[in-house]
Length: 262
Image 1 (cartoon, helix red, strand yellow):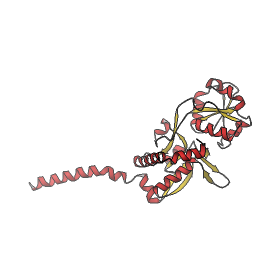
Image 2: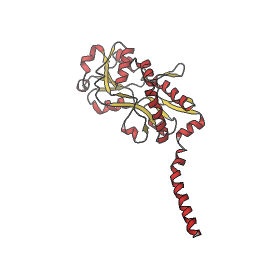
Image 3: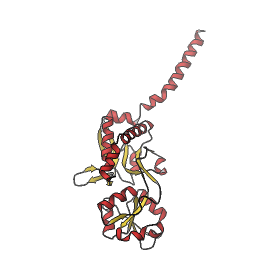
Image 4: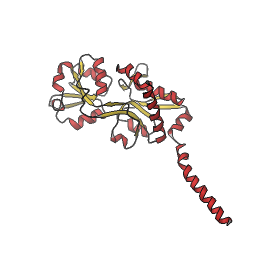
């Protein structure tokens, strides 16, 4: 009987060990590492207003998602470290552990979802054209844009370029490396039109009165912007909960109004 009792105890201990195993695994979350090291590393491209912009003269970042990154770091009781990244290296930099969270107007898509997680969406967007106001009637549709002789300018490596290459077969796609100056190319007539997220076209028409956002309320497709995360459920759940509270408490809305006036 003693041996039977010992076996029963062993079985109970085994069951308890199996039940506790997930909790032990969760203790190794990236979230715990962030808190332990006292630093939250956020990846930003620094070239996408209103989300993040790098002042190359000072090395300082500003923008809506810079403020949100600081708020997230404060919620964790840690310091913020901004890690430079690019649209073409964004996913690789995340998966190599160069940063903990990617911010700065990142489009949700299934290609990224294959190897990473997304937070809850922060904005609903879609690809829409922006052109000189004098040419607004010329570029209302994809059929009007996709014509020989039309120069469509695009920043490299992101969803804008992917959209252009999938939908434009006759227009000339001009890849311009500096997203901070790309709209000047439209103003100076070195390019005719750009297709980008509707939220960006709304802002850029305010910054460049010569340019008009074309039907931003009726974009060519449906899209969402969110924060990019490693495959870590615990970290994802924390970011989602922080984001939920920031939206419900009005923090996100106030920041959005500051940078977009909406």
